[in-house]
Image (cartoon, one colour):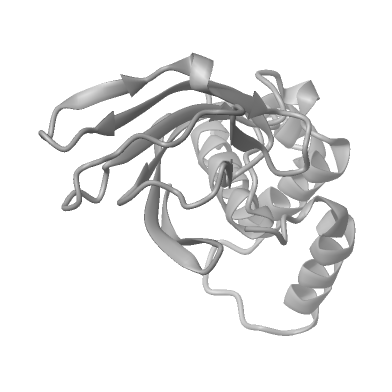
Length: 208
C-alpha cells in the first residue's frame, strides 16, 4: 500500500507518504471460512480463494481508510509538523515503534521516545509531543526528513476484526468468485455497493 498527500496543521502543510513496512501476517478470514461461506468442499480453488481474500482486505482497507489486521507502516514527512499533535493514517494505532529524522547534516537520528507519547485511545491514533518538547530541526530537501514507524490494525488475530467487516470480506470474495469476468454495472453491483456501504458506514474513517 502506498498513500500520499498533505498533512495540514495551522495552515502549514507538510507533504507525506505512507508505505507498508511489514504486511499483515494473516487475513481477516481464513480460506476454510471462505470455502464454508461459498459451500465449497474441494481444494482446487484454495489458492484462488486466498488471493480473493487478500484482494478483499486491500479493497476494504482503502475504502475504510483503516488497517484491519496489525501491520507496520512508515509515515514519511518532508518537514517537521507545525503542531504538537499529529494524526497517523490507517488506524487503529497499536503502538509507535520509533520516530527517526535526518538532521541538518543529513544524518539519520532517532527522536527520543521520552519526547512524545502514542495516543492509542482516540478514533484516529496520534503522536503527541509532551509538554516542553518540540519536533527536531530537519534537513530541508528530503521527502523522508521525518519517518514515523508504527503498528496499526484491530489486532493480530482474525477474531480481532469486527464481524461486520469480516462479513464484508465474505461478500466481496463471493461476488468476485461468482463473477470472474468483467462485471457490468447493474442491479447486482448496485445491491452489493449498497450493502457494503450500510454494513461498514460506522467503521469508515472520515478524518485526516
